[in-house]
Image 1 (cartoon, rainbow, N blue to C red):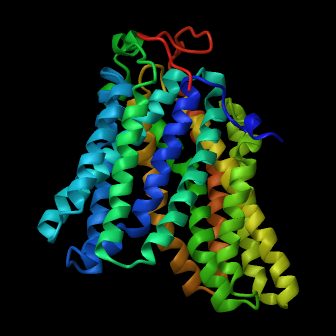
Image 2 (image 1 turned 90 degrees about the horizontal axis):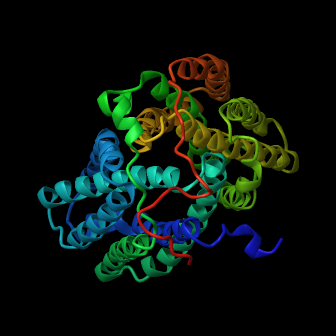
Length: 421
Protein backbone atom coordinates (compact mmCIF):
# COMPACT_ATOMS: atom_id res chain seq x y z
CA UNK A 1 0.00 0.00 0.00
CA UNK A 2 1.31 3.44 -0.95
CA UNK A 3 1.83 5.94 1.87
CA UNK A 4 -0.30 8.48 -0.01
CA UNK A 5 -3.20 6.06 0.25
CA UNK A 6 -3.00 6.27 4.02
CA UNK A 7 -3.33 10.06 4.03
CA UNK A 8 -6.64 11.91 4.18
CA UNK A 9 -7.41 14.15 1.21
CA UNK A 10 -5.92 17.67 1.04
CA UNK A 11 -7.89 20.35 2.82
CA UNK A 12 -9.18 20.82 6.38
CA UNK A 13 -9.02 17.13 7.27
CA UNK A 14 -5.35 16.91 6.37
CA UNK A 15 -4.66 20.13 8.29
CA UNK A 16 -6.32 18.54 11.33
CA UNK A 17 -4.10 15.47 11.06
CA UNK A 18 -0.87 17.46 10.65
CA UNK A 19 -1.96 19.56 13.61
CA UNK A 20 -2.55 16.36 15.57
CA UNK A 21 0.87 14.98 14.61
CA UNK A 22 2.67 18.11 15.82
CA UNK A 23 0.69 18.23 19.06
CA UNK A 24 1.25 14.56 19.91
CA UNK A 25 4.99 14.76 19.24
CA UNK A 26 5.04 17.55 21.79
CA UNK A 27 2.95 15.51 24.20
CA UNK A 28 5.37 12.61 23.90
CA UNK A 29 8.23 14.94 24.82
CA UNK A 30 6.31 16.39 27.76
CA UNK A 31 5.09 13.17 29.35
CA UNK A 32 8.55 11.62 29.18
CA UNK A 33 10.33 14.29 31.21
CA UNK A 34 7.93 16.65 32.94
CA UNK A 35 7.59 14.68 36.18
CA UNK A 36 11.37 14.31 36.51
CA UNK A 37 11.81 18.03 35.85
CA UNK A 38 9.38 19.04 38.60
CA UNK A 39 11.04 16.67 41.09
CA UNK A 40 14.64 17.62 40.28
CA UNK A 41 14.33 21.29 39.35
CA UNK A 42 11.26 22.17 41.38
CA UNK A 43 12.52 20.57 44.57
CA UNK A 44 9.25 18.70 45.18
CA UNK A 45 8.63 15.15 46.30
CA UNK A 46 7.31 12.56 43.89
CA UNK A 47 4.05 12.36 45.85
CA UNK A 48 3.43 16.10 45.50
CA UNK A 49 4.17 15.99 41.79
CA UNK A 50 1.81 13.04 41.40
CA UNK A 51 -0.87 14.84 43.41
CA UNK A 52 -0.57 17.84 41.09
CA UNK A 53 -1.01 15.70 37.99
CA UNK A 54 -4.05 13.97 39.53
CA UNK A 55 -5.71 17.26 40.46
CA UNK A 56 -4.96 18.64 37.00
CA UNK A 57 -6.62 15.63 35.40
CA UNK A 58 -9.66 15.92 37.67
CA UNK A 59 -10.03 19.65 36.96
CA UNK A 60 -9.82 18.99 33.24
CA UNK A 61 -12.56 16.36 33.37
CA UNK A 62 -14.89 18.54 35.47
CA UNK A 63 -14.45 21.64 33.31
CA UNK A 64 -14.60 19.81 29.99
CA UNK A 65 -18.38 20.28 29.70
CA UNK A 66 -18.36 24.07 30.32
CA UNK A 67 -15.54 24.52 27.82
CA UNK A 68 -17.43 22.34 25.35
CA UNK A 69 -20.50 24.54 25.78
CA UNK A 70 -18.32 27.57 25.06
CA UNK A 71 -17.12 25.89 21.86
CA UNK A 72 -20.74 25.24 20.82
CA UNK A 73 -21.88 28.76 21.60
CA UNK A 74 -18.88 30.62 20.25
CA UNK A 75 -16.72 28.73 17.77
CA UNK A 76 -14.91 25.42 18.19
CA UNK A 77 -12.02 26.41 15.94
CA UNK A 78 -11.30 29.61 17.86
CA UNK A 79 -11.69 27.90 21.25
CA UNK A 80 -9.24 25.23 20.09
CA UNK A 81 -6.75 27.89 18.96
CA UNK A 82 -7.16 29.75 22.24
CA UNK A 83 -6.53 26.59 24.27
CA UNK A 84 -3.40 25.77 22.26
CA UNK A 85 -2.03 29.30 22.61
CA UNK A 86 -2.74 29.41 26.35
CA UNK A 87 -1.21 25.95 26.79
CA UNK A 88 1.98 27.16 25.12
CA UNK A 89 2.25 30.09 27.56
CA UNK A 90 1.53 27.90 30.59
CA UNK A 91 4.21 25.40 29.58
CA UNK A 92 6.76 28.20 29.32
CA UNK A 93 5.71 29.32 32.80
CA UNK A 94 6.12 25.73 34.06
CA UNK A 95 9.90 25.76 33.52
CA UNK A 96 10.16 28.57 36.10
CA UNK A 97 8.34 26.63 38.83
CA UNK A 98 10.40 26.19 42.01
CA UNK A 99 7.84 25.25 44.69
CA UNK A 100 4.61 23.34 45.16
CA UNK A 101 2.77 26.63 45.66
CA UNK A 102 3.83 27.71 42.18
CA UNK A 103 3.51 24.25 40.67
CA UNK A 104 -0.08 23.45 41.65
CA UNK A 105 -1.90 26.34 39.91
CA UNK A 106 0.27 26.04 36.79
CA UNK A 107 -0.15 22.28 36.38
CA UNK A 108 -3.89 22.54 37.13
CA UNK A 109 -4.31 25.22 34.47
CA UNK A 110 -2.35 23.03 32.03
CA UNK A 111 -4.74 20.15 32.73
CA UNK A 112 -7.78 22.35 32.15
CA UNK A 113 -6.63 23.83 28.83
CA UNK A 114 -5.45 20.40 27.62
CA UNK A 115 -8.91 18.98 28.30
CA UNK A 116 -10.56 22.02 26.75
CA UNK A 117 -8.42 21.67 23.66
CA UNK A 118 -9.33 17.99 23.30
CA UNK A 119 -13.06 18.71 23.63
CA UNK A 120 -13.02 21.65 21.21
CA UNK A 121 -10.99 19.71 18.64
CA UNK A 122 -13.49 16.85 18.87
CA UNK A 123 -16.29 19.33 18.26
CA UNK A 124 -14.36 20.86 15.37
CA UNK A 125 -13.98 17.44 13.75
CA UNK A 126 -17.76 16.97 13.97
CA UNK A 127 -18.30 20.36 12.32
CA UNK A 128 -15.77 19.88 9.53
CA UNK A 129 -16.44 16.24 8.66
CA UNK A 130 -19.71 14.78 7.30
CA UNK A 131 -21.46 12.42 9.72
CA UNK A 132 -20.77 9.28 7.70
CA UNK A 133 -17.00 9.95 7.64
CA UNK A 134 -16.39 10.91 11.28
CA UNK A 135 -15.46 7.48 12.61
CA UNK A 136 -13.00 6.88 9.77
CA UNK A 137 -11.35 10.29 10.29
CA UNK A 138 -11.22 9.64 14.04
CA UNK A 139 -9.43 6.38 13.22
CA UNK A 140 -6.91 8.33 11.15
CA UNK A 141 -6.46 10.63 14.12
CA UNK A 142 -5.68 7.74 16.43
CA UNK A 143 -3.07 6.36 14.03
CA UNK A 144 -1.46 9.79 13.79
CA UNK A 145 -1.58 10.12 17.58
CA UNK A 146 0.29 6.85 18.03
CA UNK A 147 2.91 7.84 15.47
CA UNK A 148 3.39 11.32 16.91
CA UNK A 149 3.56 10.16 20.51
CA UNK A 150 6.07 7.43 19.62
CA UNK A 151 8.30 9.94 17.81
CA UNK A 152 8.11 12.28 20.80
CA UNK A 153 9.02 9.54 23.27
CA UNK A 154 11.95 8.37 21.13
CA UNK A 155 13.31 11.91 20.90
CA UNK A 156 12.80 12.39 24.62
CA UNK A 157 14.85 9.29 25.34
CA UNK A 158 17.87 10.90 23.70
CA UNK A 159 17.38 14.15 25.63
CA UNK A 160 16.83 12.40 28.97
CA UNK A 161 20.21 10.70 28.52
CA UNK A 162 21.84 14.12 28.99
CA UNK A 163 20.26 14.26 32.47
CA UNK A 164 20.49 18.01 33.14
CA UNK A 165 17.92 20.60 34.18
CA UNK A 166 18.18 22.28 30.81
CA UNK A 167 17.58 18.98 29.03
CA UNK A 168 14.40 18.25 30.98
CA UNK A 169 13.23 21.85 30.55
CA UNK A 170 13.71 21.51 26.80
CA UNK A 171 11.14 18.69 26.75
CA UNK A 172 8.52 20.95 28.32
CA UNK A 173 9.48 23.80 26.00
CA UNK A 174 9.25 21.36 23.10
CA UNK A 175 5.58 20.81 23.90
CA UNK A 176 5.14 24.58 24.26
CA UNK A 177 6.55 25.03 20.77
CA UNK A 178 4.31 22.25 19.42
CA UNK A 179 1.22 23.85 21.00
CA UNK A 180 2.11 27.23 19.49
CA UNK A 181 2.65 25.63 16.08
CA UNK A 182 -0.70 23.85 16.35
CA UNK A 183 -2.43 27.14 17.16
CA UNK A 184 -0.89 28.83 14.12
CA UNK A 185 -1.66 25.89 11.84
CA UNK A 186 -5.29 25.86 13.02
CA UNK A 187 -5.71 29.33 11.54
CA UNK A 188 -5.76 27.57 8.16
CA UNK A 189 -8.92 25.71 9.12
CA UNK A 190 -12.33 27.10 8.13
CA UNK A 191 -14.41 28.74 10.82
CA UNK A 192 -17.74 26.86 10.96
CA UNK A 193 -20.82 28.97 11.36
CA UNK A 194 -22.66 28.49 14.67
CA UNK A 195 -25.56 26.08 14.33
CA UNK A 196 -28.73 27.81 15.45
CA UNK A 197 -30.86 24.66 15.65
CA UNK A 198 -29.43 23.48 18.95
CA UNK A 199 -29.86 26.92 20.53
CA UNK A 200 -33.44 27.11 19.37
CA UNK A 201 -34.27 23.74 20.84
CA UNK A 202 -32.51 24.43 24.14
CA UNK A 203 -30.86 21.02 24.03
CA UNK A 204 -29.81 19.23 27.19
CA UNK A 205 -26.14 19.70 26.36
CA UNK A 206 -26.58 23.37 27.26
CA UNK A 207 -29.04 23.00 30.12
CA UNK A 208 -27.77 19.99 32.03
CA UNK A 209 -26.25 16.54 31.80
CA UNK A 210 -27.59 13.81 29.52
CA UNK A 211 -27.52 10.78 31.83
CA UNK A 212 -28.24 8.11 29.17
CA UNK A 213 -25.44 9.53 27.03
CA UNK A 214 -23.03 9.55 29.99
CA UNK A 215 -24.06 5.96 30.81
CA UNK A 216 -23.11 4.95 27.26
CA UNK A 217 -19.71 6.58 27.71
CA UNK A 218 -19.13 4.73 31.00
CA UNK A 219 -19.98 1.34 29.49
CA UNK A 220 -18.10 2.02 26.26
CA UNK A 221 -15.00 3.30 28.00
CA UNK A 222 -14.81 0.10 30.04
CA UNK A 223 -12.99 -1.36 27.03
CA UNK A 224 -10.14 1.04 27.88
CA UNK A 225 -9.34 -1.15 30.90
CA UNK A 226 -7.78 -3.42 28.29
CA UNK A 227 -5.09 -0.78 27.75
CA UNK A 228 -4.27 -0.86 31.47
CA UNK A 229 -4.06 -4.65 31.33
CA UNK A 230 -1.61 -4.40 28.43
CA UNK A 231 0.64 -1.71 29.90
CA UNK A 232 0.46 -2.52 33.63
CA UNK A 233 -1.19 -5.83 34.54
CA UNK A 234 0.23 -8.10 31.84
CA UNK A 235 3.90 -6.96 32.13
CA UNK A 236 3.82 -7.53 35.89
CA UNK A 237 2.18 -10.91 35.34
CA UNK A 238 4.74 -11.94 32.72
CA UNK A 239 7.70 -11.02 34.91
CA UNK A 240 6.35 -12.39 38.17
CA UNK A 241 4.37 -15.50 37.25
CA UNK A 242 5.36 -16.94 33.87
CA UNK A 243 8.26 -18.59 32.03
CA UNK A 244 8.01 -16.12 29.16
CA UNK A 245 11.28 -14.27 28.35
CA UNK A 246 11.10 -10.98 30.27
CA UNK A 247 11.94 -8.70 27.29
CA UNK A 248 8.52 -9.62 25.88
CA UNK A 249 6.97 -7.59 28.70
CA UNK A 250 8.11 -4.46 26.85
CA UNK A 251 8.12 -5.74 23.26
CA UNK A 252 4.46 -6.74 23.39
CA UNK A 253 3.56 -3.06 23.98
CA UNK A 254 5.58 -2.10 20.92
CA UNK A 255 3.81 -4.83 18.94
CA UNK A 256 0.45 -3.48 20.07
CA UNK A 257 1.41 0.04 18.95
CA UNK A 258 2.46 -1.18 15.51
CA UNK A 259 -0.77 -3.16 15.10
CA UNK A 260 -2.84 -0.13 16.07
CA UNK A 261 -1.02 2.05 13.54
CA UNK A 262 -1.47 -0.58 10.83
CA UNK A 263 -5.02 -1.77 11.47
CA UNK A 264 -7.01 0.99 13.20
CA UNK A 265 -8.43 2.60 10.06
CA UNK A 266 -9.18 -0.74 8.40
CA UNK A 267 -10.91 -2.24 11.43
CA UNK A 268 -13.02 0.86 12.04
CA UNK A 269 -15.15 0.00 9.00
CA UNK A 270 -18.68 -0.94 9.90
CA UNK A 271 -18.83 1.24 13.02
CA UNK A 272 -20.03 4.43 11.33
CA UNK A 273 -23.61 3.84 12.53
CA UNK A 274 -24.83 3.29 16.08
CA UNK A 275 -26.16 -0.25 15.36
CA UNK A 276 -22.86 -1.17 13.68
CA UNK A 277 -20.90 0.28 16.59
CA UNK A 278 -23.05 -1.67 19.07
CA UNK A 279 -22.17 -4.94 17.34
CA UNK A 280 -18.50 -3.97 17.16
CA UNK A 281 -18.42 -3.11 20.85
CA UNK A 282 -19.85 -6.52 21.73
CA UNK A 283 -16.99 -8.07 19.79
CA UNK A 284 -14.55 -5.87 21.70
CA UNK A 285 -15.87 -6.99 25.08
CA UNK A 286 -15.78 -10.65 23.99
CA UNK A 287 -12.18 -10.33 22.77
CA UNK A 288 -11.09 -8.66 26.01
CA UNK A 289 -12.78 -11.32 28.15
CA UNK A 290 -11.03 -14.05 26.16
CA UNK A 291 -7.72 -12.19 26.55
CA UNK A 292 -8.10 -12.31 30.33
CA UNK A 293 -8.66 -16.07 30.18
CA UNK A 294 -5.57 -16.38 27.98
CA UNK A 295 -3.47 -14.38 30.45
CA UNK A 296 -4.59 -16.65 33.30
CA UNK A 297 -3.46 -19.70 31.29
CA UNK A 298 0.05 -18.46 30.42
CA UNK A 299 1.76 -19.74 33.64
CA UNK A 300 0.50 -23.28 32.97
CA UNK A 301 2.81 -23.74 29.95
CA UNK A 302 6.51 -24.01 29.25
CA UNK A 303 8.49 -21.20 27.68
CA UNK A 304 7.62 -21.79 24.03
CA UNK A 305 3.94 -22.57 24.50
CA UNK A 306 3.54 -19.80 27.08
CA UNK A 307 5.03 -17.31 24.62
CA UNK A 308 2.53 -18.42 22.00
CA UNK A 309 -0.41 -18.05 24.40
CA UNK A 310 0.89 -14.62 25.44
CA UNK A 311 1.05 -13.46 21.82
CA UNK A 312 -2.54 -14.60 21.25
CA UNK A 313 -3.53 -12.73 24.43
CA UNK A 314 -1.87 -9.54 23.19
CA UNK A 315 -3.59 -9.94 19.81
CA UNK A 316 -6.97 -10.25 21.54
CA UNK A 317 -6.26 -7.20 23.71
CA UNK A 318 -5.32 -5.25 20.60
CA UNK A 319 -8.45 -6.39 18.76
CA UNK A 320 -10.57 -5.33 21.72
CA UNK A 321 -8.81 -1.97 21.77
CA UNK A 322 -9.31 -1.36 18.04
CA UNK A 323 -12.98 -2.35 18.01
CA UNK A 324 -13.68 -0.60 21.31
CA UNK A 325 -12.19 2.70 20.18
CA UNK A 326 -14.08 2.61 16.88
CA UNK A 327 -17.37 2.03 18.70
CA UNK A 328 -16.52 4.81 21.16
CA UNK A 329 -16.14 7.35 18.37
CA UNK A 330 -19.42 6.30 16.79
CA UNK A 331 -21.37 6.69 20.04
CA UNK A 332 -19.62 9.95 20.93
CA UNK A 333 -20.70 11.58 17.65
CA UNK A 334 -23.74 9.52 16.66
CA UNK A 335 -25.69 10.04 19.89
CA UNK A 336 -24.85 13.73 20.33
CA UNK A 337 -27.32 16.31 18.99
CA UNK A 338 -26.24 18.49 16.10
CA UNK A 339 -24.80 21.79 17.28
CA UNK A 340 -23.87 20.51 20.76
CA UNK A 341 -20.82 18.36 20.03
CA UNK A 342 -18.64 20.44 22.35
CA UNK A 343 -20.82 20.00 25.43
CA UNK A 344 -21.48 16.36 24.62
CA UNK A 345 -17.79 15.72 24.03
CA UNK A 346 -17.19 17.02 27.56
CA UNK A 347 -19.90 14.72 28.90
CA UNK A 348 -18.45 11.74 27.08
CA UNK A 349 -15.03 12.48 28.58
CA UNK A 350 -16.64 12.82 32.01
CA UNK A 351 -18.28 9.40 31.81
CA UNK A 352 -15.20 7.86 30.26
CA UNK A 353 -13.00 9.07 33.10
CA UNK A 354 -14.59 6.65 35.58
CA UNK A 355 -13.18 3.44 34.03
CA UNK A 356 -9.88 5.25 33.48
CA UNK A 357 -9.65 6.10 37.17
CA UNK A 358 -10.83 2.71 38.43
CA UNK A 359 -8.94 0.64 35.84
CA UNK A 360 -5.38 0.80 37.23
CA UNK A 361 -6.53 0.05 40.78
CA UNK A 362 -8.79 -2.79 39.65
CA UNK A 363 -6.19 -4.42 37.39
CA UNK A 364 -3.28 -4.26 39.84
CA UNK A 365 -5.38 -5.35 42.83
CA UNK A 366 -7.03 -8.30 41.08
CA UNK A 367 -3.90 -9.68 39.40
CA UNK A 368 -1.72 -9.30 42.51
CA UNK A 369 -4.22 -10.34 45.17
CA UNK A 370 -5.92 -13.26 43.43
CA UNK A 371 -3.60 -15.58 41.48
CA UNK A 372 -4.81 -16.53 38.92
CA UNK A 373 -8.42 -15.81 39.91
CA UNK A 374 -8.02 -12.08 39.41
CA UNK A 375 -7.99 -12.62 35.66
CA UNK A 376 -11.39 -14.30 35.87
CA UNK A 377 -12.71 -11.28 37.79
CA UNK A 378 -11.45 -8.99 35.02
CA UNK A 379 -13.05 -11.25 32.42
CA UNK A 380 -16.37 -10.90 34.27
CA UNK A 381 -16.01 -7.09 34.14
CA UNK A 382 -15.89 -7.29 30.34
CA UNK A 383 -18.77 -9.78 30.26
CA UNK A 384 -20.78 -7.29 32.33
CA UNK A 385 -19.94 -4.60 29.77
CA UNK A 386 -21.10 -6.90 26.98
CA UNK A 387 -24.42 -7.51 28.76
CA UNK A 388 -24.93 -3.80 29.54
CA UNK A 389 -24.13 -2.78 25.97
CA UNK A 390 -27.59 -3.36 24.50
CA UNK A 391 -29.84 -1.93 27.25
CA UNK A 392 -27.73 1.19 27.84
CA UNK A 393 -27.47 2.09 24.15
CA UNK A 394 -31.19 1.40 23.67
CA UNK A 395 -31.91 3.77 26.59
CA UNK A 396 -29.81 6.48 24.97
CA UNK A 397 -31.47 5.98 21.59
CA UNK A 398 -34.97 6.25 23.11
CA UNK A 399 -34.10 9.61 24.64
CA UNK A 400 -32.69 11.14 21.44
CA UNK A 401 -34.82 13.73 19.73
CA UNK A 402 -35.03 13.85 15.94
CA UNK A 403 -31.76 15.63 15.23
CA UNK A 404 -31.21 16.89 11.71
CA UNK A 405 -27.63 17.29 10.66
CA UNK A 406 -27.02 20.57 8.83
CA UNK A 407 -26.86 20.05 5.07
CA UNK A 408 -23.37 19.26 3.86
CA UNK A 409 -21.69 18.83 0.56
CA UNK A 410 -18.65 17.03 1.94
CA UNK A 411 -17.81 20.12 4.06
CA UNK A 412 -19.87 22.40 6.30
CA UNK A 413 -20.86 25.90 5.38
CA UNK A 414 -18.06 28.15 6.53
CA UNK A 415 -17.20 31.78 6.83
CA UNK A 416 -13.97 31.36 4.91
CA UNK A 417 -12.61 29.13 2.21
CA UNK A 418 -10.64 26.12 3.52
CA UNK A 419 -7.00 26.08 2.60
CA UNK A 420 -5.50 22.84 1.33
CA UNK A 421 -2.19 21.80 2.78
